[in-house]
Every structure is written in structure tokens, then in C-alpha cells.
Image (cartoon, rainbow, N blue to C red):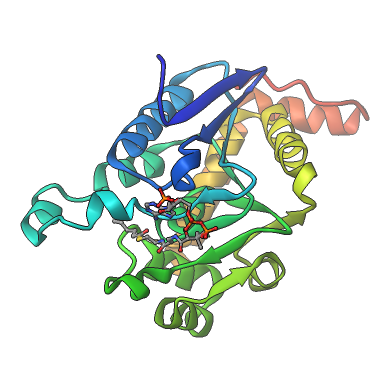
Length: 258
Ligand code: HXC
């Protein structure tokens, strides 16, 4: 379907979703979030797609929720509309890996959206922040919870209370992003990572994603048990036999998601 605020391209096994509201630095309004949710659900359901890249423009991944759209809303409208929750849920429901490729500003809801992805590749120009405090509010799409888990309490408090931005170097050092690359290499690097992921057995890929995400939700003992059960269950797949045979035969494995 045709979207107005995002661009969706599927090439080989990778779906790339580009946030596209250049005049507003990709600020997240209701339309964009609805379209993004729909595109993510479609990509997840598309058998051809094995990895998803979410990106923005060189200047902004996304400068946050759309302040102009939000500014006049009442408590009741925000509360009854469960502002942004349906979109957030949609990102969380995607089973295939989602890479955030971030250049420029990833602020407020933009930072939170990047953190909902499975990992973040950033350019040297990337700037992360939770500046909602400057607007008289706080993060509302997971920033207080996810940023704290990514970078720890001290830096998360610093970011949320002062509203300061974190540059790419600090973000990598703090564990917020997995890699920092030169601006012009961003999509090439993200694409290479996506292609690598696409080569694997989808069964193992989804199991790995679920197991890592579980670590945020449970105790160590339960998480270890969950991991072990998934690990054991992968021995029921043909892909496990193929992967281990290929290693011993010194050839590349041909996974078939079976
Ligand atoms: C609406 C935005 C916007 C936003 C930028 N724009 N951010 N519009 N919502 N979040 C618009 C500007 O109004 C302007 O349009 C155009 O994009 C370019 O922005 P400039 O400010 O002129 O660019 P620049 O001077 O380069 O500054 C870039 C910036 C600044 C530092 C990123 O735009 C900025 O501080 N933006 C707001 C960041 C922020 O506070 N984010 C948190 C939002 S709250 P016009 O037409 O005016 O020229 C949030 C809550 C999430 O995210 C929780 C929800 C549940």
C-alpha cells in the first residue's frame, strides 16, 4: 500500500522502512506511527523478509513525538487515546530482527523508537536524547525504562533530568548503540548486518531474539531456563543438523527454516 509518511522498500530478504517527514525532522505523529505499525506488521508477515531496517534521514532519525500535534491535547484525550501505545505494541510484536540505522537526531520518541529495535547502528553525527523535561513532561514511549536498561541509572537520570544529548561516541561507550560508522556508510553497514542475519536459520534467529529480550523481563534463573529450553528445542530442527554438518564438512550451511 502507498504510505505518505514512510517509505518501504523490500530488496531480497531485507525490508527497509524510512521515516519520511523531512519538514518536521521525522517527528512522530499519529499518521506516521499508524503507517509504521502497519508496515512493520506487513514486513513481519512477509515470508520473503528476514530482517527489517528502520531508518530516517541524514539529519534526523526522528526528533521525537510531534509537539505541534500533542501540544493542545488534554489529559483525558491522552489517557483515553492511550497515546502511542498501539504503535509501541506493534513494534514489540515484530518477531523478525529490526535494526535501527540512526543518523542525526534521535530525540524523545525518536530515541525511544530506536531503543525498541533490536540493536542500533549509528553514524558519527547521531545525537540521542530524552529532552521531554524541557517541554514540561517526561518520556512516554519507554524512555525512562529502556534507556536505564541500556546505559544504567546514572546516565539515564542525567539524560532525563537535564535533557542533554548524548553523541555517538558516548552512546557507543555506554552500550546504547552497537556500532558507530561514518555517515555515508550507514545504510551499507546496516544492510551488511541485515544480510548476515538473513543467512541464518529463521528459527534460531527468532529464538535468539526472544531469549535476549526475556532477560529484561525475568529473573536470571528463569531466563537461563528459558534459554536452555529454546536451545534444546532447536535440536528438533533440520537447520541444526545442517549447521553442524556444514561446520564439520567445512562448507557454508544452507538453512531452510526447517
Ligand atoms: C514537531 C518538530 C519537532 C517535533 C522538530 N520539528 N522537532 N515538529 N515535533 N518533535 C520541526 C520544527 O518545528 C521545524 O519546523 C523543523 O522540524 C526543523 O526543526 P528546527 O528546530 O528548525 O531544526 P534545528 O534548529 O536544526 O533543531 C533541531 C532540533 C529541534 C534540536 C532537533 O528541532 C528540537 O529541539 N526539536 C524538538 C526535540 C524534542 O523536544 N523532542 C521530544 C518531543 S516529546 P518549522 O515548520 O517550525 O520550521 C516526545 C515525547 C514522546 O518525544 C512520548 C510520547 C508518548
